[in-house]
Length: 133
Image (cartoon, rainbow, N blue to C red; front, side, top):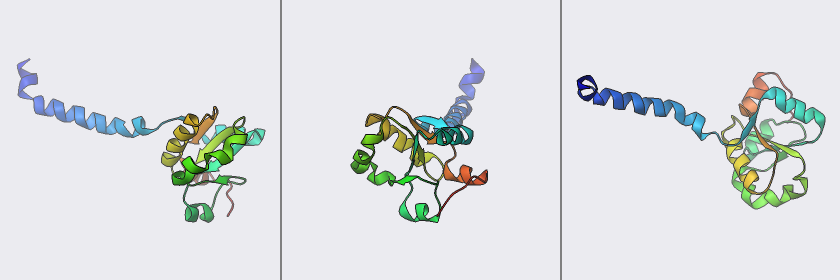
């Protein structure tokens, strides 16, 4: 017990650094799909791809047949997707952070099957999967 009391600062430091390491994984919200799962869903043809990146990012390259609604505009434009609620939605951004936020927004808007692409477009391109401009 004396050891713990004498080194309480070190134990506190370990606890804080452990929490800092866990923070990024706790930030991720929503259901994520791997690249393989995403391509399988896309090939089934019952999926909408929603790109939530900004305009210049989208113009530089995006997934084929994706719909573009930037994350900051999503709350105002979610009505554009209401008629497609029966389909699965794969949300894509650059790395997967913004798409997790969009996934949460779409779920609260009543979409049942909403997925965030794990790793985002960066992971998609790293695997050599196709994009269009």
